[in-house]
Length: 573
Image (cartoon, rainbow, N blue to C red; front, side, top):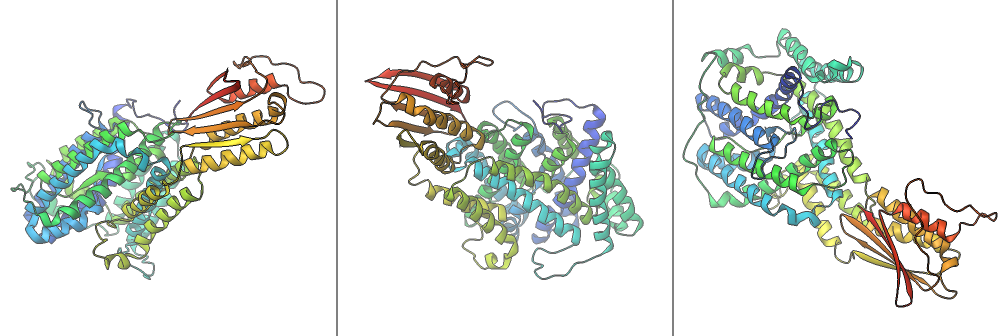
């Protein structure tokens, strides 16, 4: 079953026109904010204009190759197969700045190859980290990605610097264009004709660019410089022998870890939006995607540019438009590679006003944010899990609210390179400590009579929260055990008690009931089976209760051993 808002699923083959124009839509959202970052690194390396232009061409190639690796499903366990094209990430800016200042672009290249290798190694052991990356932390990652993307969009739209604490609103012409762009995207996406909704971003982008050019918000000299070398030209990345500095290894390794956590969050979002029955992160898909991300960073280093990761904004756009086909991501990669041979196209793609890019990011962040909250709220959370999610979220937000505080903690700077990294590191550490004392098995001794049902409800609520179990599954477990509690007085020997045991892993919840008393055969629990008539007193007979229990469970067996009756219920989680 596909989501109701989906027009083209991940495996679908949209028509050529839909694929091409949707890919252009994603490319236009990636290029302006993304290609600014390599230029900043080049400036820190004191590169001349020719080297900067060459770096931009190499960056285009890197974006294209990394997008192809990520969006495809290649042999050898490579590629997530989701619409998640690449973008240069600000997480790598601080270490790349340090490398550029110490050894120029050759050192940036070598350290990025090292960082990519760290991600590749991490992808090989990711499956063993499942206990430390439970579903609620995956939901926190997705939520933080939405928040970070929204804050970045807000800053770009209003032209605010990262450390603009206390700055007033800057209502420039560019900001007005950005606000109108945001309103236009909302209008087309919500009230526009259905065929045009998938192109909401592209339509508004073209109109906004034309308006910005007419109002003088686009630098004509930059466009002329881009076309000065002709329409077609071979990309000449600033290739140089990569260098390595052991003094920067720790900083790049930690940044690679933080970037990997973001990639895991992005790909978890992709899994969630493409599968209405999504329950937990698919580690195989995450390993494939993380491997592609690591190789993409190694290639980016080889081409003389900085680090990249999947673009969260593209994931949000795919949700908003309903076009989630991986073929669109592959088209984005191919177009980036082709554009690397057209210097004028590079200048054109980077001329889109930043406030317009901010409007696109704000729009897409809403869809990512709501998916993250849905993932978190799909689980029962006890006090430990509430603290894991809550403190992780608060510490992550504090990174953007109080940047100066963290900038004055040099020892923690690599660990707090971004708000997302800080939120996840805090949550993972708390989850590690809070797992101490949490048992995967729990027992309840149940005496038939008044209060038995209430005790079952309290027991299941406590264990579901401790395990962060899925709400819908835990509700079925509770209903089944509560049904037995109501019937226990009829089947348990007077003066005896029933023993209930729950066992949990990420894929199953098993309930075992043992008691001394009357044996009951499991009634037919198949769909549409007829049950015994309800007696005049209104009490449910034991065999009807067993029928209800059987309908609640996915597996149900019963028997007798050592003078004790037993019922075993299995629930898929």
